[in-house]
Image (cartoon, rainbow, N blue to C red; front, side, top):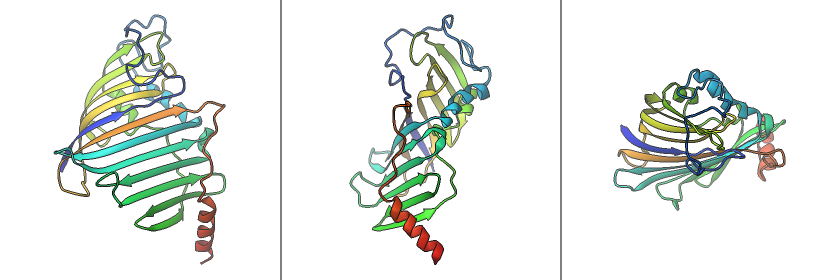
Length: 255
């Protein structure tokens, strides 16, 4: 089944001016007073790998990211909701992630929660739903600040580059591609900070969607935010359930 997707991604980092277009200064294509990012010229992406590497630098720093997703059918009826939050310390440890899924309405009783915690001693997942809770020790794969699409592939498909000197988000990249991750026929707009981090993106496309509640074509709207934590902000705090998790996992090992 093929579904039309309306996907909105907004990424914010410390020091950014906010959403795309929030900066009131007039865009300019003259990069004369701006040191361009590696892999980027004033008119095109010259090396997508070099440019994507600028965003990858965030993986060694503390950050917080959030996302929300709503799936609707052709009549506008909501099929499912999902929201998540990740807080990661510098170097990726400790890391905490929480994902909540529910449907077909925001007040539905079929709510499933997945909590992840990783520190120097333990990496554990807590899953709850339908009145039960389960703990499991996992191989620590970490939490990534990557957007929900392959960034380098998006850079490969950029058609237009706009440089806006003297703004907090000086680069705007636009393009279209037949395939981007699990999306097809994608049009997108990306905004980068002066340091090369992805600060905002808007994508529209199509995807195959497995509808849980009815076999209809569905639309998906996703918002995604990412902010680098300053040195004065704390990383993730240990969840209240972690002692129970340690006890449960210890009992599983002993059994």
